[in-house]
Image (cartoon, rainbow, N blue to C red):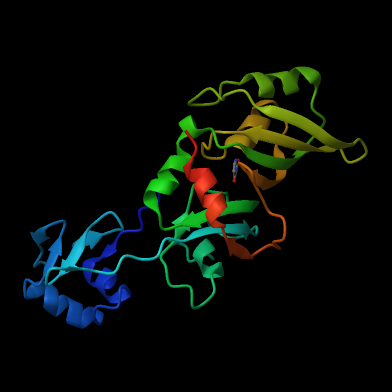
Length: 243
Ligand code: URA
């Protein structure tokens, strides 16, 4: 699911620089504002980037489309808001970052790594659809040492609680016999909640630490934890081009 990031109409107007929230409320009450071609006079209507908002017949400025690649640290929620007031991913954006971007998919609170943020809903939906097969590469520190049969299970696809995973690529990168832990690279193209943790748990090797190192052809090269960059035009075009 895409985080739709709905906001009150007067806030969307204020964010677009039309007027203060209070003044925007007056404009709404006065019948100056159309949402998707219909006059909205009541307060409380919520909108997002899919809605066409016009004030006195002029569409409000559409935000510039942004495509951000971020290196998410552990201890941050990949959402734009949190009920428990924990740090969210958009808190990591610089103060003068204007566009209202949101994460494409999720990384768990305790997972670090590559995540894309955007305000382009079509782009986000496309990337998240399993049909587009964006490969995500994770590196997990797990408890124990994988047996050959367990590796095969992960590779073939396995039944989890509510679905069967597609075939995955598995590469054991190192084993620490003394500590009884391993580092394993896992490549999947789905994005179910806690999928990687659930896959390893299902073969009896709970994840201790998890990081997403790659998203399709994108890597974290040149970024440190907590930092981000805009995707290049070529990178965006390449991602949009997926059939
Ligand atoms: N799989 C998980 O279990 N956690 C993540 O954060 C991402 C994929």
